[in-house]
Length: 295
Image (cartoon, rainbow, N blue to C red; front, side, top):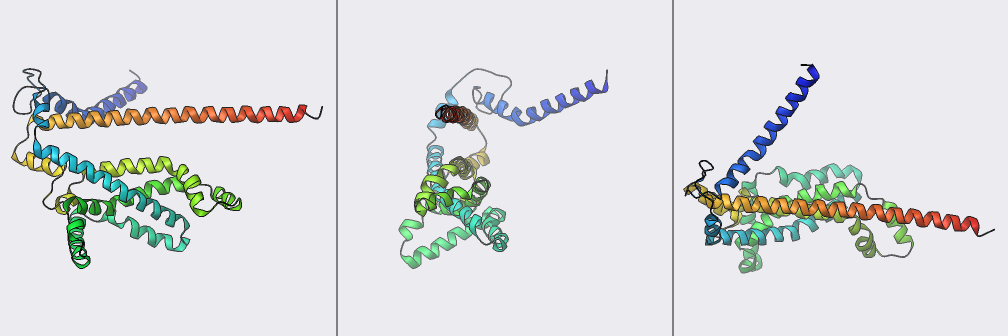
């Protein structure tokens, strides 16, 4: 057996071990969601059932937490993405000697423990709402969770959008302004279409980061609950296959979203290639017409 064969076998073994470690627990958990015992068990498989999905659907606290998690996730997108977009534009235009300090200030919430962010959010908005008389509106668990999570998720959005913005050609803005376009028109018709992929990615990351967040949410949510806080309470009392059923649903939604994104991405790539080919053909036709015209 040659050394090249041994290396290939070792690499194959490592890849199998890696994916087994990564997806093995998910496979086991998925099996327990369809097994009949009242405790999570993948073996022996006593019988197929969908009863745990029904029990999950009838779990009022978990369904309420799921709805709140979705509402908070959408709210975090509405706050974090515009803030991250504005911060990235300022970062791109600020004086270069001030960028290091500006970057440190905007990214520092990512390095702050979630517990501190959650407690600080509750204290600040409690005092602010009392001073402004907006306590019935602002001092609510869902609103505080949105503010608390957005304070650091906006930094993620900043980094994602900034990576895209660095490849933007400022000559397009200058050309549009020279042709009479206003700054809002340049922003809406030139900059935003260019940043669309980054904005979509930032929105997805913001929602997922909000959906799974626990440290900040558990303090900022007050008397309300999210799916993560409900799951934490359920696990303390002992896990059941209903939680495995929830994991199966989340895995299915994640796979469907990943597949849909890949299909859309490939469709856009094919469309871009088609448009580029059509533009090249049109350019060649115009050149041929220009050559033939004098004759």
